[in-house]
Each structure stands twice: as C-alpha cells, then as structure tokens.
Amino acid sequence: MADVRAFPPPPTPSRSSHRLWCCGASRKHQEAPGSTRKHQEAPGRTRKHQEAPGRTRKHQEEPGSTRKHQDAPGSTAEGPGSTTEGPGTTAEGPGSTTEGPGSTVEGLGSTTEGPGSTTEGPGSTTEGPGSTAEGPGSTAEGPGSTAEGPGSTAEEPGTTAEGPGSTAEGPGSTTEEPGTTAEGPGTTAEGPGTTAEGPGTTAEGPGTRDHRRGTRDHRRGTRDHRRGTRDHSL
Image (tube, rainbow, N blue to C red; front, side, top):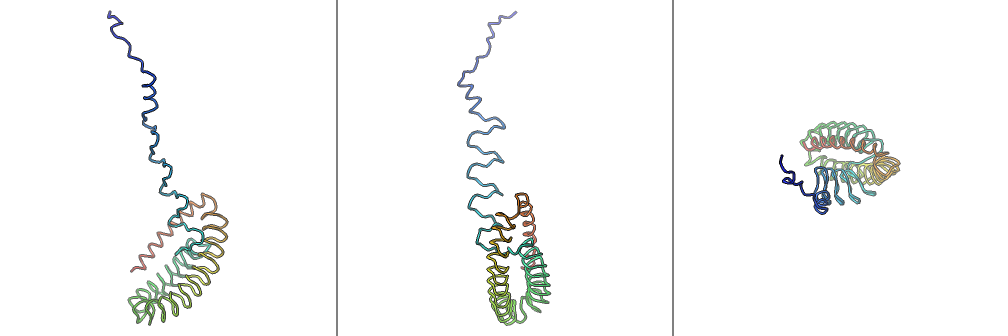
C-alpha cells in the first residue's frame, strides 16, 4: 500500500486569489462592470425605437409645428375618412389616391393632377393643357397661376397652397384644416384638444397600448403614401 504522505492534498487558494476568481472575472451570463449586453442599453444611449428627451421622431411633431401630411381628426392620416389628406380618398383629394378628386393623383379623372391626362393637365403629357406644366397658360398646374390652382400660387384658387384662403391645403388655417395651427381643428397636432395626435392625451393615442397600435397603423399609412408617391412620379 502506497504511503498517503506521498500525495499531499492540493493547496487551498488564498483569500485574495479566491476574491479575484469570484469577483474580477465575468462568467458566461455575468457582465463585467461598464459593459453592455445585446438588449441592455448603456446610460446616454438610445435604442432604435426609444427617443431621448428633446428629440423628435420622424412621425412625431413638436408643439406648434405643422406636418406636411398631417391632417384632421377622424382619419387615419391627414384627411377625415381617408388614409391621407382629403376626405373620402387615399391621399389629398376626395375620391382619389392623392390630391385631386376622381383621380389617382391631384387632378380630376386622370392619373395625376389634371383631368383626362397622363399627368396633371387634361390632354397633355404633364399637368395642364397647352402649357409647360400642370395648368393651361401657366407655369404650373392651374390656369393663370404659378402652381396648380387658378389665380393662386398653388393648387386651389385664392390661396398660397392647396386649400382656398389658407397657407396650405385647408381653408383658413396654416395647413389643411380650418381654424387650427396644424391639420386638425382646435389642436396643435392631429387630434382635437390635445398636444399630439389623439384627443385628450399628451401623445398620439389614448393609453400606451393604444398609442402603439396607432403607431402601427400610421406605418401602414406611410407605406400607402409611398405607393402614391411612386404613382405621382410617373
């Protein structure tokens, strides 16, 4: 039988080496101080769908600002009862995909802004008949005007932009709806009586869960608007 004293037991680790082993090294699921895991954000960093204070997202407006394609309450996007700006339409005009009624884009009964034409004007390659652009006898879409509407700078008569008597598409307003700073009446943003898009709330939808669902719907509206933009570029 072999002598037991020939095989002494392994040395016991000292307190300092044991502390180094248990506290200094990082195990498989234990992060070292100052490191960030895949789904753990460091202080001062912002995740993809997490906004820092003072930042505005692409589809989030600050108080007092006006969005280009942001409109009235009771609609998915800009116009009431429509995906975007005009009532009863996918985009800006009623009964059309974009701005003009009864057309795919801005004009009546046409692919774009003018009636019976490939683009915005009737019987022409572009927007207006017998003109360089959208309107007859004008530089742009409307007759006797610089842009789309007659006697105006833009699409509608008596207005700077697309709506009559307004700077933008709605009458008597800075943008598309009357009596509002933005596109909904009595509100800074899309919904009435609210700072943002939903009524009676500081953000876009009532409640956090509703706001998430509203954001998903808004993304779908954005994809539809992109398709309309591609049609408009034809």
